[in-house]
Image: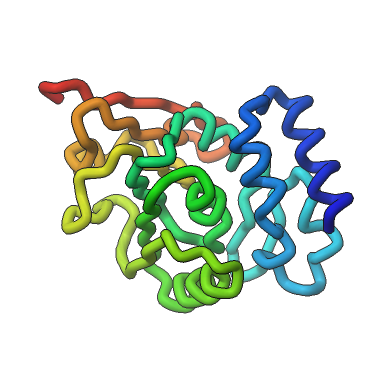
Length: 189
């Protein structure tokens, strides 16, 4: 795993991820904990991994790129949607104060919560719910990260940002060609 982690970090550096805090979070987050045993050998590849049942473990470069765009700080409260495997939330947990995450699929959410516990991640709060609605009861957030793509940024999420808060979302009508979009909430809207 250690050699795989080093190989992955070098690949991310070559891809333009130079932020050492992000690279350290990737290196310290055991990807094999997020994949079935049969895929453990490929866990550290810089590639998305098919987990079956339509679930995919996000490609590490994409995860790191989204976090880089988020410009997250150690005091931030971050909303990350959806929970999925919990990999993205685990990376964020190493970079900010609190991560809030929602997942509509109960089985998927419980598996992610079990991973958080086994990895000793204590600053992630997972809850049932759809990504589009965010988590108004816990708002406002300093940062919001949508790991799945949307045609348009959900308005409900923009309202859950602090002033000067940042939302990062892959946007566009074509699921295969989306652009990572960074939206900053100014005082008025």
